[in-house]
Image (cartoon, rainbow, N blue to C red; front, side, top):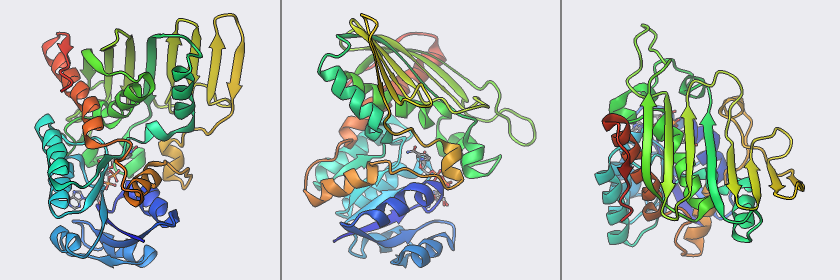
Length: 348
Ligand SMILES: NC(=O)c1ccc[n+]([C@@H]2O[C@H](COP(=O)([O-])OP(=O)(O)OC[C@H]3O[C@@H](n4cnc5c(N)ncnc54)[C@H](O)[C@@H]3O)[C@@H](O)[C@H]2O)c1
């Protein structure tokens, strides 16, 4: 039985990591830590295991792996500390707040021989998995272009705070761009089996304000034109200012048809063929932030995939060296927005 610790006991631990580890028969939750006193104890009381007073102590307790579920700025230092202590890591997205930190995480994983996985859950959503299968079998020919969107009303509803760390540039580094953009950028890499090599972006703070009515420190909207190594060109829009229903859709346009993922309330995947045929798939629907904060939950697949990779000693599906490719595109988008230029992404 794999022994799991969780570092950072906030919302994502409450709605995903803790319940999904608890549901997995191959592991047990044995250790919790949070910098806010009392939070870890709450989880130890609910799930069993022990609350620790420091990360060092938790890492020495005999855990096989930890989830790193803290604010973005601490992802790299805590993940590296755990890897250096000989503990496997599942780190939440965005991987880290600088490219140098992302690279240091990959290097620490390689040096330690332990696994580093990043929580890019969009890859495991059923319509995305099916879309990838259909692309590989040539259902819509060669992909020419795409449009992907991730928009919701912002992190206030998620954290329950009008002034959360998500708005603090020092702790979050980015706003919607890295919070949501990294999901869709990683998803594009998965769906297209390709890698983004050129970015033109506009990143803006259009609406979000602190309670004193001053604009938040980070972006609330980002628009990217991405070009891939194989010459596919498409757009990504991510937003914290969609004050209606969440939009989490991706549409892929191929030489022989179109695939629509999560773009219809009933059918999570629709294939439209060039000859007019339409095929409808009723797979899962993605759980919105709103549904998760009110108790709705579907298994993300991230935790089960991580546990399975540990159990079978197989490298995880979204390793650090895979996830860093999306981070390179995100940092390039930031540079593009600042310089008003198209930026080449050097993909290692
Ligand atoms: N995969 C997803 O779709 C998804 C969704 C939401 C959040 N996230 C990510 O999960 C992470 C946590 O987000 P959240 O929504 O749970 O935030 P949160 O504020 O609810 O929880 C973060 C917790 O970490 C603790 N913490 C922060 N810095 C720490 C440190 N240095 N040491 C120990 N504890 C520390 C805080 O006290 C808090 O309890 C973020 O990186 C976020 O981007 C991912």
